[in-house]
Image (cartoon, rainbow, N blue to C red; front, side):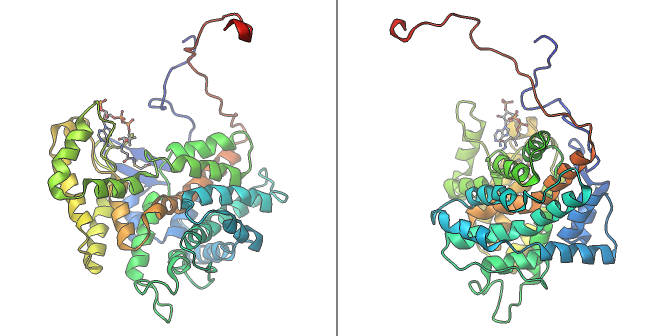
Length: 396
Ligand code: CMC
């Protein structure tokens, strides 16, 4: 190994120092800028938390008002960018559209982008937070062949997103007077807060790694979106719903738990386990309650929820899961809530990306403020062939 430490998966390597988020995985503690996630989830709106992550302090009333106006003002996307969606096949995955369209923002704003200027950096950050729900909703409307809905300046962040997604197409959300169900707005707000940041997770680390080269923020966030897409990360909530569909009935649960325990079987219980939380995921505790409330309100008799509870109950008393400290994580419940809000399954990771943008831009800004940050350039443990001589093609 020479002078290198071999740490695949960064299990014991701190890649940076940060003032944004603190996690104590053993005690189930999650703090954003020192504030417990439980308190923020109880009292804040998502943009207030985004402001906190970006600026280090909670906003006062007038700061929040200005920030919300700025976000809403930047929510609109360029008409040419809107045409990008026409180029995607109707059944393109919304994450595929999100990666491409967010990356292409650099083609719209690159010329005036100066990442060394703190004011430019804040403008980029709010542009990204503002535009993300618009791009996300546009990708959904494209996939179902419905016309694009423009963001509205008078709506809150979550109201705007729901309106752009479902306007005139779902009585559950918006009636003819454009009334938006405030319980659904509240649930979405909560999910966005819980997903807003999670220190050096794979996508945030990807954003930081890309940013360490001086790449522009739109390209860096697109890289983060790509990393988020995987089922071991942001794709987990989609994977949970697909898994529940595969399990099918409560009677099948023991069979699938046995599969998850079998080292020869690649099947894993999606929504279980976490790299950092080894006792419980505090976000899962908060979200579990909301999950019950929303299902009660919608009077959802969806058998998937009953099935999810059976999986949770049976896994939690199984020695395999107890010994390995595998508990339901936030994504075990978030997918079920999204489903109750009528968000289609293929949009679940997109929802995660909207929320995590607040964390990504906060980390990007923190990194840019520290001029001494070196390019991230990990070393490797070479295990390939030793030196050998080239052979001409007719002698091989
Ligand atoms: N089902 C069955 N066995 C599991 C699971 C699972 N979901 N997760 C871990 N294990 C087993 C694993 O096989 C290993 O067993 P053994 O010691 O016998 O080899 C042991 O538990 C330790 O697993 P690990 O893979 O070393 O743990 P990790 O910290 O590297 O992985 C994880 C964390 C989240 C990738 C993993 O638990 C997993 O794949 N979970 C399912 C996917 C999921 O829910 N992901 C969302 C994470 S939360 C959202 C986010 O923050 O991005």
